[in-house]
Length: 330
Image (cartoon, rainbow, N blue to C red; front, side):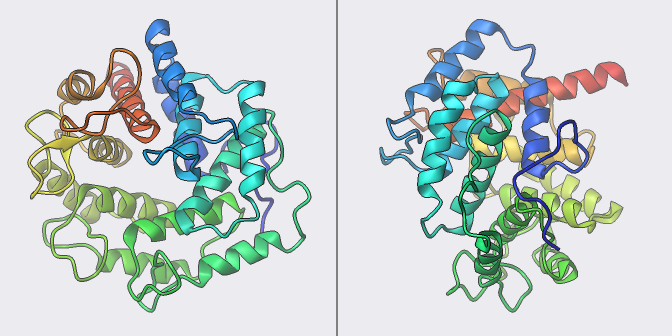
């Protein structure tokens, strides 16, 4: 059933979309970060904004995917004011008529929601009355026989990550995923003997990021149980990196910012004890990934910061702070 897309009544938090709840949680975690440090990262993010209001990716042009991460980072830092929201909102409006991939659609919906809640323009202003239904139809056209969702309509196999993205898009549209039991079974079928999850069915080696997406999706749909929780905990112990972060999978010899963020988020969401040492995870991000002038890179081999990895770096610091606060309250 279609709800009220992109608009949340004042004061309502219990039914907030997952991405907005996560954003608020991370902002709380960063609330005590040193003001000078916050400002350096804020200025880095703003330096990536282009005249059309969007934010550049590594290719140089404005990109919805990177714009979404920039907005999430600025939200964490308290750096989304009326001027920023107006400029970003105009970029969002300009992208509405484009044919968007699932990932870009989620980026568009989330960015539009955040800037609207912060005082920017309504991304659906003037849209055709059937716009939301058309978007939902385009999402459903990517559903595959295995119960998941592929990246495009030509995909034959469901993707764990894209299925999670589709669920997020439905949530942002105020809708439920059609036939959620099929989606839950699809995720169950992506689990492997090591306790983790893979991206597509033929894969045999689990990954940290598909596992994080699977866990988040199962929690959203009510499909998580204690046995799965324990399985995931055992898998995450295997993909801990020597540096203190998480590996993408057991074949990758170094930790990276994305896997460290998603791994730590999963540890916290499932309340897994003894999987990661918070101090070491923080040291990895600060010593290996954070630039003193602002921004974060993806891994030690990376040479440049970008807005996506800056979000992951800030997000990891926020999760670290949240873990410490919970341990003090315990």
